[in-house]
Image (cartoon, rainbow, N blue to C red; front, side):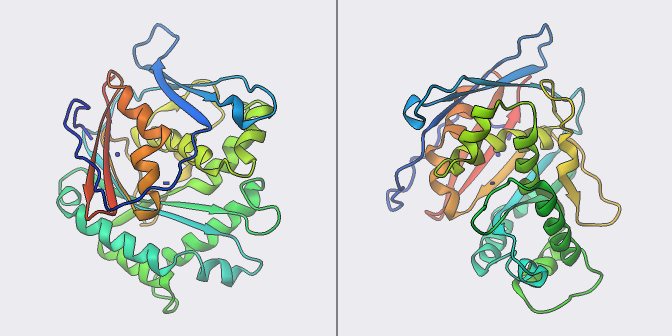
Length: 307
């Protein structure tokens, strides 16, 4: 759910008028603030919940991050934001992990980012968001999601092609284009729901029907932290780097201070109008951000910390 060192003072192009964005879920407001400690390497993500989104008031939520002490001066290129659901049979979970539209979005993102990916000290990553399917859909069972993720990753990292399904085409595409790492967004979300970061009221809100967009955007800040090598002060037991998995033997993730993300058409409205994007643009003393529109459908976001 899926962005570089371009300053937020840059002129952001007007969004193409041909795209009609649906009504956007704004039940939360995100703010990025300086951390409460004496270190200038801390920042706080504050979440304020709309009174209209619940029958009773929900207290604000603060998550404090610690910036990485050092980084590689390189960049991340994020070329996939794929959503899928577990199935009752393992082979169906694997077969339905990637759809034809996902494959098209991945190949398009690779085309748009060819120059960036060819630069030295660059790692290319895909984001995979797996949730449970069925009456109890969502992220309430970490073990089930992690088990299914392992099946899918095993197929993507197989020594040879295991068939002709879309996932096998994605596997070869990843090999050909050096897509070496995957963020397991589904299990990250499930772990966040278990974390003492959230009070019961916050947990209930994010799991409630209609708040999927809010939870997706909330998790985006954690995925940024994974890429930048940041840690969570308010829950040290949540090691973010464990949710970045290698797709290539011998490859390990290295913190980089720049993240370039290609948002596919399904994420266009969220990238353009969402509370996550508003927060990143407003936090111009803590993060630099810039958004570029491509072919009336895709958005490329570029983010980098300033502290």
